[in-house]
Length: 108
Image (cartoon, rainbow, N blue to C red; front, side):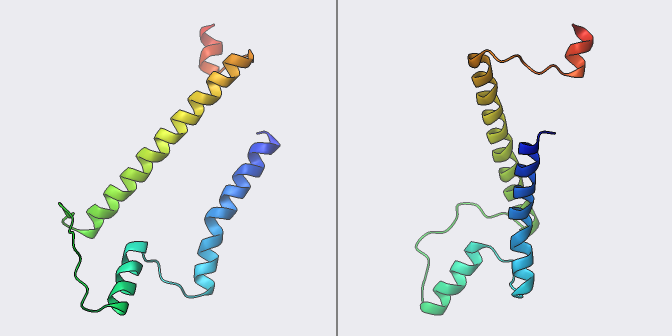
C-alpha cells in the first residue's frame, strides 16, 4: 500500500475515533441533532407547536435507524462509485496504464 494511502487511512481513523474520546471525556450523550434541537426549542418556548409534521413516521426507532443506515450506505456507495469512475476516466485521459487485477492477468 502506498504511503499516501496509509496516511489517508490513518487520518480517517483519527477523524472517526477522536469524537468518541472527546464524548467519553466530557460524559456527553449520543443524541441526534433533531433531539437536541427539539430540547432547545422546548426549553426556549414550552408552548411551541410545530407547523408541519412528517407524512410518514417509521413504526419504531430500530426501523428509523435502519432506514438512516441504508441511506448512508447508499450515499457512500454512490460517492465511491462516482469518484472511482472519475479517477479511472482521468487516468485513461492521461494515458496511464490500467492496473491489472489477478482475474485480468489470468484471462489475458
